[in-house]
Image (cartoon, helix red, strand yellow):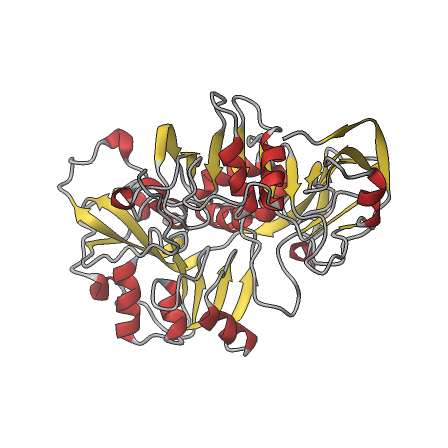
Amino acid sequence: MGSQSKMAQPQSAKEKIARRIAQEMRDGYYANLGVGMPVMVANYIPEGMEVVLEAENGMLGIGPYPYEDQVDPDLINAAKEPVTEVPGTSYFDSAGSFVMIRGGHVDITVLGGMEVDEQGDLANWTVPGKKLQGMGGGMDLVAGARRVIIGMEHTTKEGKPKILKKCTLPLTGMGVVDLIVTELAVIEVTPEGLLLREVAPGVTPEDVQKVTEAKLRLAEDLKTISI
Amino acid sequence: MDRRVANADAAIEKLSDGATILMGGFGTCGNAENLVQAVIRKGVKNLTCVSNNVGTPDFGLGLLVSERRVRKLICSFPGQNRACQQQVLDGEIEIELVPQGTLVERIRAGGAGMPAFYTPTGVGTVVAEGKEVREFNGKKYLLEHALRGDFAFIKAWKGDRWGNLVYRKTARNFNPVFATAADHVIAEVEELVELGELDPDSIHTPGIFVNAIFQGTNYVKKIEKMVVRQRA
């Protein structure tokens, strides 16, 4: 998917997050990328590395968006956008798709988040009283993928923390998150709580803590995010 | 043996008010377009529809919602269909949200003669409310029950008079599973071919699951979100 029609601003928060998450990919991984920013991760997978993208509607090996004359209504991704095949693509039904997802065959999933807490609980599917939403395949992905990475902006639009002691919104999964990547920090969820592993250039651990409700422990080998 | 019927209207002759219909498709991809139109013509109502999504207000299941034929929806992602959201908020439609993998597995179980199963999906969430939680090897799982339909509306690419079906690309999605779990399974295909023409190794749904088949017409195959790339 290395060819979105609109290129993001070079230094937008979303692009920084996507670039950093791409560093978590390894050759031979099967990955499911959520709708929105997570899909951007595909743009930064290093040249020559083969990462096979899964679409929960029944496809392994998602290719780039089609040119206008290649659009095929029988070939869409889970965001219901037209896509293309790559050499090696396979199709399967929805039951098979969730055998892969729930059965632990997907190496990594990248999803957005509304709230994550220090137990690794995730809330990302609904806000009560607002519009009607569904969880889609999100609850299955966090329950079954081997590694769950949440890519999100560090705070809400109002500047409120999204990384909390305890989630307040309805959960997508309990104790499911492995890694949180924001424009400010890379934070690992450990049995002892949240471990600050990396900070963005020019950002101090104190800066990150100020906009994080949960207490952050500092990694002994704290690094600067390099993208 | 001949499972062919003349058209969508003939195929749903037995459909009546209050029926439960499993509807294949992911969004507007792989939808039984002719059957939806026939339901509207027939005038049946108070339907329970099981489908991953609700389509758009003018297409697929969304059309049945717009025409106020639906009493209950069982789905994982009703999505951006505002007309549908309004009917749910107004209490006209009851909705049961089911995680996507649980939805398809409940129907797989319904077709496979399994009454229930345990899944890790939804533990600790609203989905778990009122459900048995059981621990296996130190991990928690929810008990989920099988689901079946009175009817299943299946869209395939090609089929034959025995009801053997082949799907195309991601238009396969829920269709092969839904085809196993209803009392009346109706398949509409883009091309009805002679018996023996389909490669036996490539048949996705063997005809044993299918009660009626017909060749559909005038497929729209709506694309819900158009994104294309530009040539340099």
